[in-house]
Image 1 (cartoon, rainbow, N blue to C red):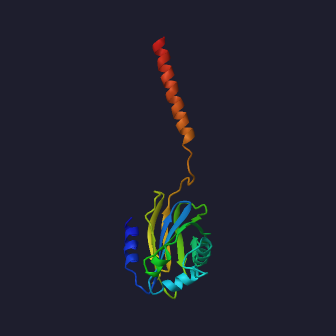
Image 2 (image 1 turned 180 degrees about the vertical axis):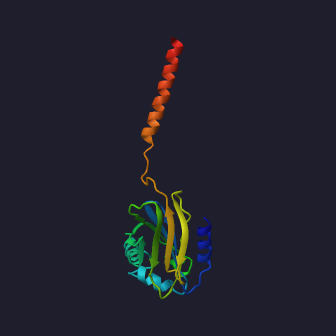
Image 3 (image 1 turned 90 degrees about the horizontal axis):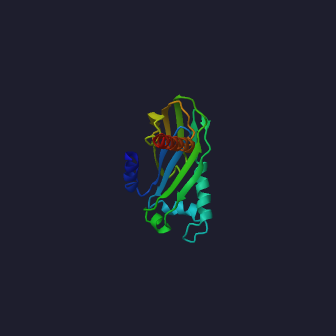
Amino acid sequence: MAVVAATASVASAHRKDEYLQAARLGIEPDRLRIELDLTPGVSVAESVLGEIDADRNGAIAHDESRVYLARVLRALSVDVDGRALPLDVTDSAFPAVAAMRAGEGTIRVTLAAPLPPLGGGRHRLRYRNTHRPEMSAYLANALVPASERVAITAQDRDADQRSLSVEYDLRAGDVHHVNRWPMLALGLALVALTIVSRRTRRAA
């Protein structure tokens, strides 16, 4: 939460002539999640809108947002231990055009990629963003892992934070979801048998 709050604070105070691109990386044992916020300052908003609103009608259509997100996606690269990861957009939200022109609108994108099977021990994940470098300022941070199996040990950024390298330790274990319903059913069955057995003994 502290990382998110800090990012939001910087986003609210970013320069008018910059396109702020802030990425937050959530590393799980078998999955990577990226929350990417794109906030154009008022001086560069028209340039960004020119890429998105292709028909210049003052509204962002679904097809226009999809085309723009594909362009952003092509500028991102992620790998773990040197193995490239295929990113997919899982969610997105575009602000009103008026808010973007005022320098107050943020495009919010959620991306995800499955991680290959990894053994326990040290691993390195690298993220790079090359979208609109001529006008952009970048931020990149790894979030505190939700899984106890993942421990971030180091974060290394280049000077403009266009690239982030994250070293983390992965504890060995089963990364698949455990279906607890059979266990619950077995537990309920044992409870039922215990109740029946006690009633039988009392009746005898």
